[in-house]
Picture 1: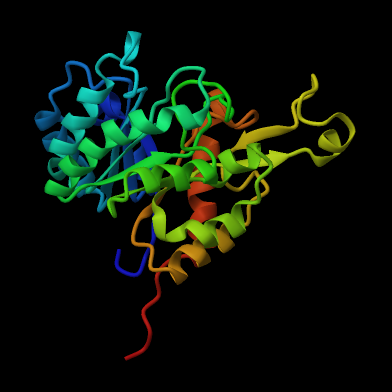
Picture 2: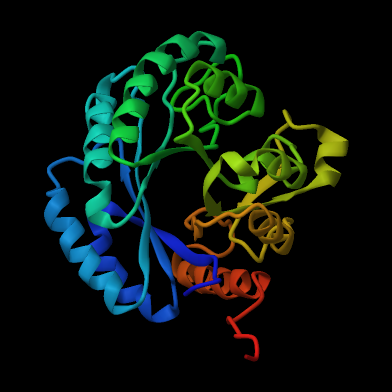
Length: 295
């Protein structure tokens, strides 16, 4: 796998032992394991052992392990999210990865500025914990329906917020889990953004978007009509060859893991059809199969 930028997919952490053997035959080269709000009662040591055995059989790797909840409030179903961050940081090495990913959290329905002090408190401690264990933290760039003024879940969806976050916790092991889709939803051009921020990108989600500019021009972004759709790579607007070129020009050593289950067409019974199309498409965008030079 040397000289390759691996292409993989997301799999639920609790389902990994069941799901990965079913889809490995399609040629996924990496798996990003995700947990929603809590790692629950899952035995992470045993899960890591079993998953490591499975991926080794297919020359694949675990790229990241992640927890997606609100660690800043810890309210309701998020009461275990912060502890789950700590557990995943402590167990990352058992999965063979040095990246733990997820949402930053947010002070619910308050402007992003008001979340920065709590972010500094929580992720200042988590950054130190991660540094001690050789782990990097990557923040997903999804707005989860939030804006600058209000929302829940995540503040890491806007480059102004990124500047504020990294100023508040100036740790080299804090970075981004980036994808073009979430920026395009805000009508941000992802390519120049990636060029600017690439050295803070620790992990890339393979998710794209289609923007209906005709609807934007006629109805704007606050009307009844949808103006953008999340897409599986290969069906959206992004030039992924450009994305991969920028990543490689800047020494990116990570993976692109497809985030499925969002495409309005390739879903339900067509979900894996779309994901395998995206897998093969992204492999072509990186140049196809590795071919060694003549000696």
